[in-house]
Length: 311
Image 1 (spheres, one colour):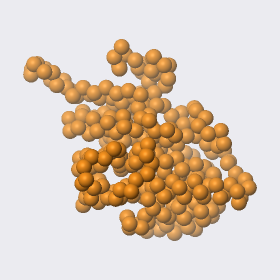
Image 2 (cartoon, one colour):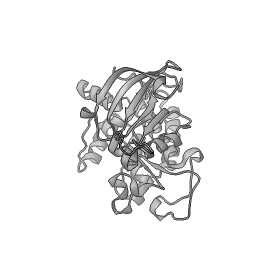
Image 3 (cartoon, helix red, strand yellow):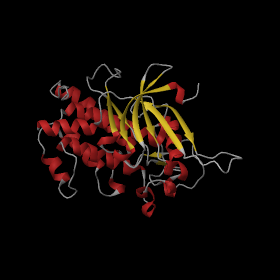
Image 4 (tube, one colour):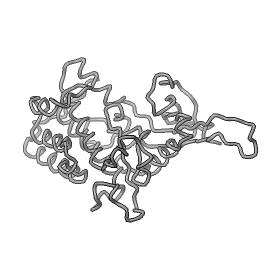
């Protein structure tokens, strides 16, 4: 059975006309061999022709073994570059799809919309759950199973040959690219859905950085800390319950927003440091989150309750 025969269409979720530039349509499908619901993401022919579709597939393949489930899992893929050896007169449009796990609770963007409409604030316990999931996902993207490195934060300065793990730069970490999944109980200590980082359509790696998104190659300045900054922006969106952030007032608005501990806000500020060298390293961020959550659990004795999210 080929890849296409193992998946049956349930319904189209979006078409090429109303989706972002990174895909040519998204559908809900069922994997026949397992019965599992999945997402088929169709890739743009132009991205196939220029190699970025292949890069996305390679990145998703590299990230397949993420241990905590905070990165979207690719089940299968198919790619046809349109070439037909020996048949120069046959012109076939390139096509490619990736088949990804289905997350049943929508996106963080959807959740923010519900909180905006209700004029409610996110529970702090959920925001700790969120920042921990995002930090663990980015750490795995950058360092893989080792989860630590003494390498320079600027990949353009690392010219000492191949490294065991090809650092992945997501480049597009925003609320719409953070999915929520309640279908599996990952941790019985929390009622919150699993945090899943998705959409590696404009992501790049250390070895391919010059062929990645424009932000990655501008002034040769992309580093591991850029994705850390985007974690801070996502957290600010949740603290302020908004989509659009004003860079001139964002930090002060986060500081002035009541109902959240300084422990949480200080980590968000550490992610949002303007200067790259002042911004927190992802490994240190993961460690500080774990220590802060442990201290809060001991000191607050349940005062930061795990309130249910808005449905």
